[in-house]
Image (cartoon, rainbow over all chains, first blue to last red; front, side, top):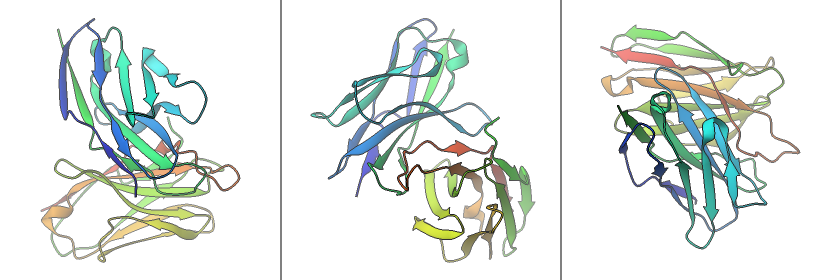
Length: 114
Length: 116
């Protein structure tokens, strides 16, 4: 079975500084990878996804993530964060080409410091 | 607006009671997922339906049940409620292409259940 590990439960970062949120996954088969964002008092929404092709994926709001198969990682990055990026970020994985359940990590809460 | 509608938004009830949460998926989406989000457990997958049939089951308690109706809306029934059932319950929908789920889910805003 596949699993997702988000190594940091909380990440504080100063406004306009870069940030990296870490995600590692485990699976015996090929997978699709996702980052979802949950703003306060809202549902989750898709930030970006990796299905195939280029390992560097760009998403909304200036975020990007890099798929590294050898390290089984899919870290999320942004070069300069804004106060509006305050949210919880979830990494998720699903087996490729299967209508299967999507497994989410426990989430990383991003705190933007003024 | 994701297009997924959940009702009620907030619900306060007592232990031992039963509640029903309702979800209307995005227009055209055939799959409905239910997730439970709590501070200690994170986002837990409960159950998935595809076009009226149960497709996958996660950490759903026997006291909980769900169904998807012919019009594709779904209901999650929670019975014999305990304090620990207090959580945010999310519904999400998707539209698998050719039977394969690419993993893009559209989430509702959730139903916050408080059990006193």
